[in-house]
Image (cartoon, rainbow, N blue to C red):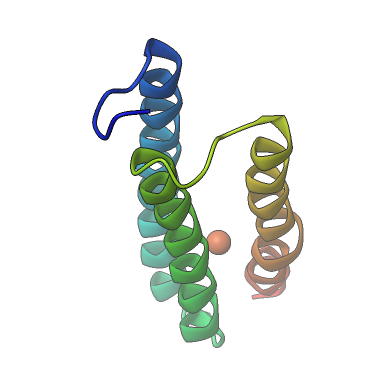
Length: 101
Ligand SMILES: [Fe+2]
């Protein structure tokens, strides 16, 4: 592939990842605001996990944009797994804290 010469599928892939990243950032920002409001004691650790996830999504997006990586079903499964794990494990910790206040 010539640099910058993406097929429609590549463009759709990059657009999907961009939307995923945008959604994740919006979700993380509103969640971090909420964690501040409830004085969640592990807020810094939680924010760091958000940064790690955002960084990984951005890295994938950059790698795909620059032709170093091809998004496939397996990669989508990995991305989905990270978000699910975060919601089911890390987010549940503050839910527990909030419900016990
Ligand atoms: Fe979170």
